[in-house]
Image (cartoon, rainbow, N blue to C red):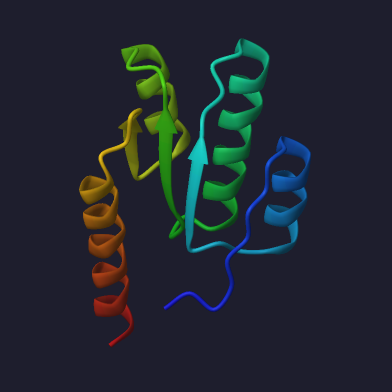
Length: 105
């Protein structure tokens, strides 16, 4: 289903990639540093505005409701807390792909 996969390790690189690409699925790890968290949420909002059909899965070490709520308000599809349960992530991605295939059949 995926013809291209990109991995970026910095906010600047991710911002550049998403400015020229329209991702279908994004998995992003939220940084708990307050300054970087703001940048992460801005990136999520930008992706969502550019393509509201993008699916954004957030992974975070924090289970704070405020961070989770802000992420959902920014347009994410799902929020997972570390340590990530692999079967849960796999199931989530599988459901997203099945939903997308149903839209294009």
